Image (cartoon, rainbow, N blue to C red; front, side, top):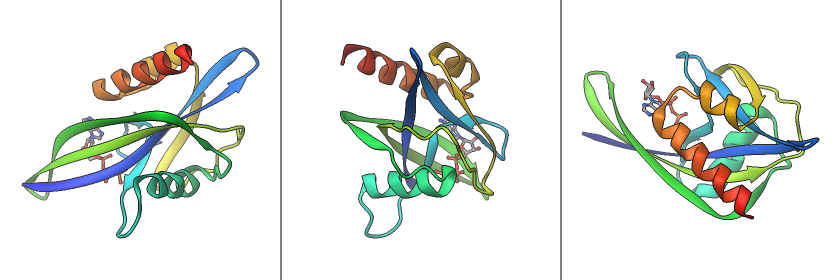
Length: 138
Ligand code: ATP
């Protein structure tokens, strides 16, 4: 079995009285958060900052302290099972304009209820719930 690790971020901004979350439309068809593979000699947070810049053009986002959550899943690649872990951080931005990379086919800012509906994977919905509750308590 192969092991793979990626890091990502739940990115949000405040617009008027609403908190909006950033979702990306992956080429394979699903909607998910910003994420990508950890490169050699990179810290988790360095990966997240780089992936966010590459995938969206956003460079002003700040980490929200004390949020770090892991999700894990299995998928098949070239006939082999891959066990994948993705570590998620929470980031706040003031940049609404997104410039997506070739890896994606779209992006959208959605409020919590809309984002929960739009996210494809159950584990991503649970993660968003955790982030939302975390931010509400702050
Ligand atoms: P990365 O964005 O980390 O570079 P990738 O695009 O190479 O990753 P994934 O997004 O992990 O790969 O997708 C690989 C497979 O896993 C796809 O078949 C996808 O449908 C599935 N997958 C992606 N995210 C999840 C998830 N949160 N839960 C379950 N399966 C997922």
